[in-house]
Image (cartoon, rainbow, N blue to C red):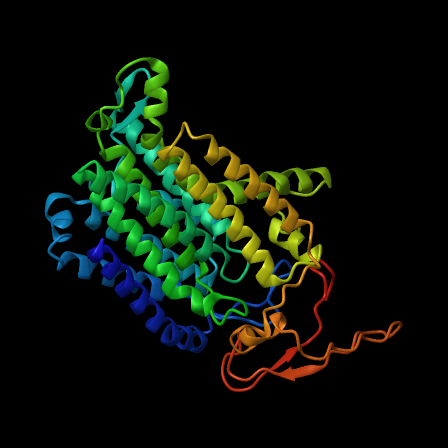
Length: 435
């Protein structure tokens, strides 16, 4: 565990320290696209945050290769090299997209090629565990198609949820934390060496997200862009593929006894395939609702709008930060609830706890006006909005004017300000209203 924590810290430190210079590079190269109608930020913000995340990945793999307890992963398996090859390709395509806005079909093809590169080097699903039947070996074509499908689905799910400051990186970090605990349990608890690569990938992915989050929280100073979202999506998928398709379920000795007992015992084997779906669950729900909504209005299913889940959270009164925290809550509930159920599938307390927390989440969704206040002794270390003596509320604009008056407020060197002082505007229109 100490070596994994060291790898995580090094990855986070490299990502954090490189994000600042990468931001200046993105500004200098003009990687600051204009604000689109569906965007929630109000000033052009540089992209290319995935550059810092990729070098954090390289640093994490390099450090792990020189640690005594982790270098065996590189000697006994080709999976780290396969991951780095696929990650480099998808990262390069993402960088080009952040700068030049590539076509969606080009990015889809690059995702499939990146998955194929990993498959060619051995990172693929070889078999699937089926309760009551045992291990079902897959043919080469079946394993390749299933691997490519899982990689493409996970990459696009992460890319789709990247709509608010800090949302994608935080949700991936939460799901990866649950995945790391599961993989480490297989590696350390069951002494399965084949689970070591997935544990290493999860630790590095957490470090990448944690190192980037301080720069990406609201108000974001830089976005990860497709170079970052596709990169972390690919690593998340690679971790699941590594432990699901490479670890032989027979080593767990789960397919013994009755079919009922085998089904319960096989739950830990299916968790690697379920945990990536904790990232996909929320954006896939959003995707289905978007298709139904646009089709009902007679629009194209691919037409962009401001009706996504995070837009709706803003519309009903939640602040930007609170909307992100609510989605963090649901992601953590799904990920760690699934993990807890896999460990104690027969415990009724797990079901009761998940049910209670789900009810709490629904209450939070229905209380957009609730504004917690920190105690007076903690006001010096919390944001101004949580202090009892908050700033004086801004005056409402006069009605009936041809155009709302926007009062500029000096922002200084924070937020999405690129260089020097820039005015930020104090008005906050509801999401979906025309500017």
